[in-house]
Length: 168
Image (cartoon, rainbow, N blue to C red; front, side):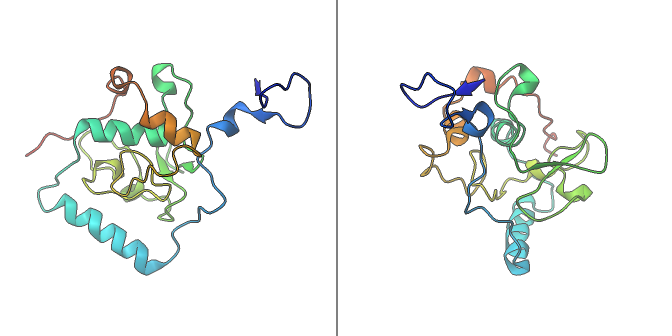
């Protein structure tokens, strides 16, 4: 499937692929490589978890899940974020943009009894996507994927299955 610029009915080079139209990648996005910055962001997330393993609420986690994994699990057309990486452990995924690597503590989703990265009440996203603490909607007009997520139908959003630990 191709998307042409307005008025283009030929097979020219102005075609853009459907997937690139929903891309989250921008030239300015770089991995968080400064160890001090990584430490600060991790400390903020850890502090928000506190000693009682507090978790974010279900609607926030569903929005984060949509930002990372897309909505193909419920029959939608929004694919996963381009920074989503498959773990060496089957069925697990981690963010390739944050620079944390593939470890149990960085997996975005976990079994219901375990704490996953998307569970943290305060969580940073290098792409500043909806659902995350550092969300920035100022570039939503330029970032079509972010715009789609911002305007996502709430009745479909609640269909995304995420596990949220019961509060203790």
